[in-house]
Amino acid sequence: MPASRTALAAWHFSPRAIDRLLPPWQDVRIEQNEPLRDGSRTVLGLKVGPVRIRWVAVHEQVKPGEQFVDRSLQGPFKHWVHEHSFLDKGALQSDLRDSVEYQLPFSAISDIFIGWKIRSDLAQMFAFRHRRTRDDLARHSYYSDRPRRTIAVTGATGAVGRALCAFLSTGGHRVLRLVRGGSPLGADEIRWNPTGDWDATKLEGVDAVVHLAGANIAQGRWTAARKKVIMESRELGTRNLSEAIAKLNRPPSVMVSASAVGFYGNRHDGLIDESAQRGNGFLAEVTQAWESALQPVESRGIRVVRMRIGVVVNARSGVVAALRLPFLVGAGGRVGSGRQGMSWIHLDDLVAAIQFAIEEKTISGAVNAVSPQPVAQIDFARALARVLRRPCIAPLPSPIVRFLFGEMGKELLLSGQFVHPKILLESGFRFGCSTIEDALNFEFGKFK
View 1 (tube, one colour):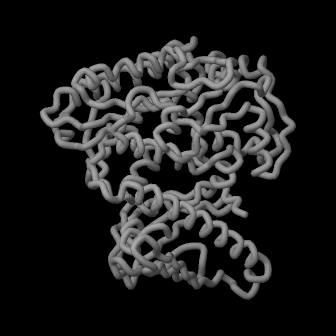
View 2 (cartoon, one colour; view 1 turned 120 degrees about the horizontal axis):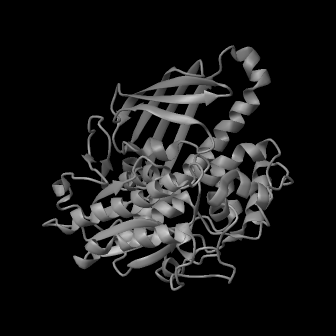
């Protein structure tokens, strides 16, 4: 691992490390996760085939900075003991050793029929865990000489928000989650109201705010009522937050706010960067209003980064999750002509880019959060088919898309653009997934 043993152990002892270690291709939910100490527990909801089971593990032999052991009390294994050891190899190097001892139920029979599958699945899981741990530590080590920050995040329950909060927490930062609803507040949670009054004084003195909240644009047809919800969730919510931040006595030094490459509309004029003008269509109108709502923060002199995010590659949510089943049953293929641009970014690169925007003081204004290698939709479909080992033979013609999804289908499925991350590249950001196939292989655990 590219970090000291101290940093490696601290990463694992972070309460949110479990979020970073769960394989994205598996349906696993965290039901309970107590801080690491002797006798504390982690409870996972794991789907095995059509059945959902609980996996309860107790932590033992916990030695901060050195090791801890997970022993299964309930779950799919008759016996399971997993020892995590952190070994010193120098100032900026360490070894992570995972030792697992397990026994299957009805082991004499199970070993014959599924033993090979279990060993294969464990090898796949640990390959994923070790790569993500290594990548996270490398990202964090880049800023290891800087003070840890307090960062407030809206939209923390979404796919990007959950990944970002876990990533920042394992890097030693304190994350404050801005939440809505009437449930009791947890530790490091702040109640906020995107369209009404709320107590923003609890943001006094935070170092940065990341604004990710907004209604799902792909949830149902775009009726007039739905379009109003989408617009207001971004414009009013962002303006409300911006005005509250601008009034603080000790405001954050930077605000990173989500936007989208939909700002550029449907484009066929080659690669476009942050200097391109706004395009046409509902998404372009939404993103312009979204970004304009940041004006109160900018007027206060706070550095603002408008992250124009592309299609986020994540096996648990979004486009990839929606297309997984159709492709697995052989019903995947191009949409419309398949020539429309698809500007994408892997989830881990996105959360790292947000951290990068927080840390790099020279970055402000519009920033394209996309891979340097956008693809046509047909090339994305072919890559997904290869990774899932399925054919790419079932097209979805444009007339059917318009009939089924209306305006939403036209803008989200039949339109696109080839966007270039000029600002990130010129500022020195390094992408972890260079091609769409790299990103999909990682998400589905296809390691060579």
